[in-house]
Length: 514
Image 1 (cartoon, helix red, strand yellow):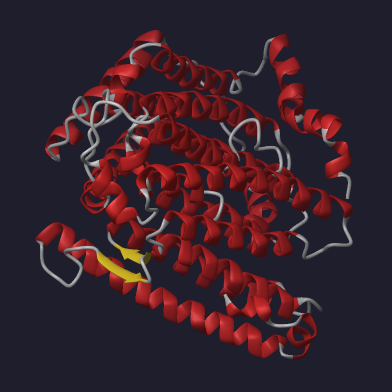
Image 2 (cartoon, helix red, strand yellow):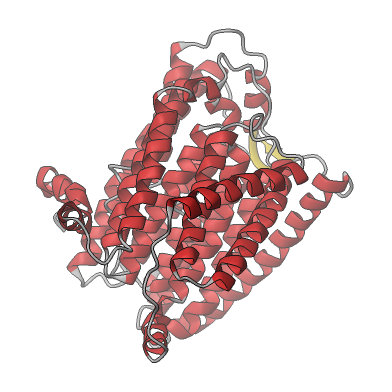
């Protein structure tokens, strides 16, 4: 993080030394993070090793570091993605006059996110997150002569500062009530909470959830993310894989606190589901590769917020890791999309879509449900006892059913069999990864006033089911040769992101004009 103090004129003179030094440090940090994570996994499964208990560093009454299973996973993710991006940028940005400044702000951003992952104090967490936002702001302005880059950077700046304000007020309210912001003593104090909590603590939790949602590009504060197309591809990869998901990590880190207000979690379910539906629909209408990936990130962050709202923090952590690795790869390989399309264009003509009968669809659905339940039983996972297990299991079954239906539409029975085997393998790998993450991400128990799952029986559960079922049906309609007229109208609205960005620009134009 000290690179942020290096003057810009020095960065231009020492750009190659700065590039090599930052890449080397990122590599060394990755080795350290992977070693710590491996020892944490060993301790979680076999109860041996130096990290069977969380490691804490307290200086001057502040818990500066909390190293446990949750923080080690996030630390390893940020370190590895940061190192890959530094290596990728060596050739991608070769010859750029601002190469030194790029590595200066990249090092600051990676260091700040790493500090955020390891911090054991809520105020330190918020400060590190704000510092990473500062570094990202300068990276988004890498091509500051482009008006679109300046507009996107300042849109993001306004949204982030709004989220920071919510988080700071939340920290003040929590401190006034609990007299500490250190995670370990805070959670231990909350473990003995009675049947009621004070209004200030409840407001603090609400602001914590709202601030995390705003900074994680949830509807309607998501419009800045699809605008960041003018930034270099490595910056997009770093932003989508290691920074935007920090809101989910905050909720996972403070899960013993946010569980005290089930109504806030139910609100998070509503926000997450709405974000998924709007962003996924907008993604289907986009022509730009990076814009499709940006809307995909918004939708995935909405699903992560949905998981947190259901209390499925282990599943949310697994989703955070899987999405980050996938999205980093997707952005860094986005330059080869045209070559892949040319290669596909020289291949055989695609087969006509074969209609799938109701019997086949019903048979596929039953096979998916029974197969998924069998895999869960094999690993001893009962979805009825896991937070949000039934709803998330339904989402998984819908996704696998849609996947198998696409295989049926080809008319190739061998492909159907291979797809079914692949779906089974995905379920096996997911369950194994989930059990590992669940052993590492074990929230401190607290006395909650109501089971969050009870709030999911009514409106939130219905919205989740309707939302994901509608997305499945919409995706199915896209495969038809003749589409209804309403889909053409929906396409126009989705292509424009349902005019959310235009609405903000109309009302906040004096702030967004750069």
